Length: 296
Image (tube, rainbow, N blue to C red; front, side):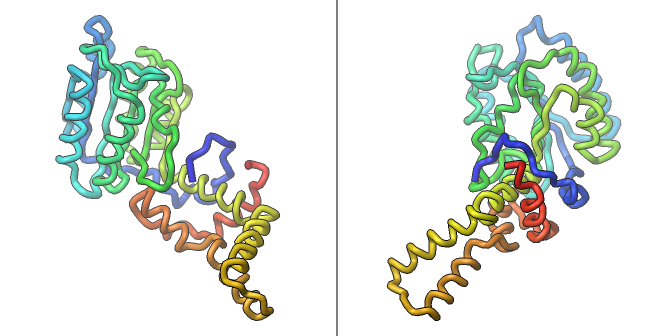
């Protein structure tokens, strides 16, 4: 199953149980800008360093000299991460829709797929507690081609889908961090300070909407019935079942194997989210899928 840009089903009934609070123990700030572009970035980091010291939050700052530095820093973050403990990586640089992150000093690019691969390694160690705040043009491209068949590269991504101006970031990013650490809720901080121009990805929300679309497409209505009949036909040919009792048992077994259930939900959530989602009742997802067929 791949993440989709289709209309999102109404998951409002699950809002209270989808996790939006974050427990962060450190910030890794990665920058790469030309000298003449550093004014706004320097002012932001000066203010943010003061604030991080006030709340006793560990912060490490890196400036990339080359594309290989990005991989080296990713490895360091991976090696120094603690299992199940959250981190924020803040990316402060330019980005290209086609090429990825731009390293100003060497005029190189780190391709989006390579960025995602390295973040995925870190997020696996943190058990899906890595947040990416990307002051990077086209940074939202990092969610392209995600699949729930491997762990998400991050718990949360906040990034622009297109170009973003440094003045907007300077006006809002410090306020965003203050609200984040005062409220403990990343959605609240995002909506108050960045939601008008920047997009947000939450891995739990995407997992749930993807699973709901799977139920809609493969388990409900005509498509679900057709899928069951196709599987039954294949099984009859393979097993040679031709008596009524055998057909009844075979039909029941196929129904159990493809009907959405809590075990199936947890099987994929353990892959994509590094945890089971027992707080989400599969019956609620089936209900939402049935009520939102038009969202397909």
